[in-house]
Every structure is written in C-alpha cells, then in structure tokens.
Length: 132
Image (cartoon, rainbow, N blue to C red; front, side):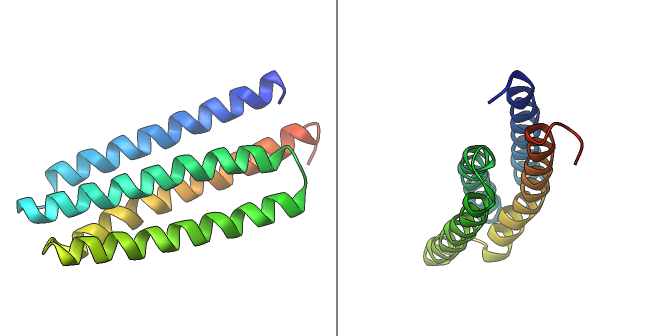
C-alpha cells in the first residue's frame, strides 16, 4: 500500500473510531433505564467490532481486484447478519431492551457503512492514479 493509501486508511479508521465513540456516548445518555442502556452499548459495541473487521478486510480487498472486493462485501454482510441475530437473541434472553439494541447497532452500522464505502472509493481512486 502506498504512503497515500496508508493515509487514506488512517483517515477512515479515525472516522470509524470517532463514530463508534459517538455511538457509545449516545448509548450512555439517551436510554432512560439501565437495561436499555446496556442493550444499546452491546449493539454499538457489536457494530463497532464488525466495522473494524470490515474495514480491515476491505483494505486488503482493495489491494487486489474487483472479485476480492465483492467477496468481502458478501462475507462482511453475512458476518454482520449473524452478529445482529446472535446479539439480539442474547439481549432478549437476558430481558434487556431489544429496541435499544437494534437502535444502537443499526445507528452505528449505517454511519460505519458510509465510512467504509468512502474508504473503498478513495482507495480505489488512489490505486487507479487518482483519475477515476
């Protein structure tokens, strides 16, 4: 990865970390009761962990080809789908707020998804010489 490519990754990693921190702050202050707060934290945390894995996998795929990138999109989608189902089952089993979990997960996920798309676009432009 070129020096500029590493800079692009660092920038987007920083944005993802900031988004996760904002999600955690919102999870700490928005829910009124402790159960919903805990469920929101779990949702945000799960979205953040899968976001880190997704960004790392996409970084690796961008250096390869379009087929690798498409495979990563499928793998990441499946990973997040399994994660959200297992997380939701875990939260419901413990009597925590399912709505808070879903809000925490998907609120963070949507922001991280835009950051990941932005990263792939920027890294692809950099790899193509900046003219695409």
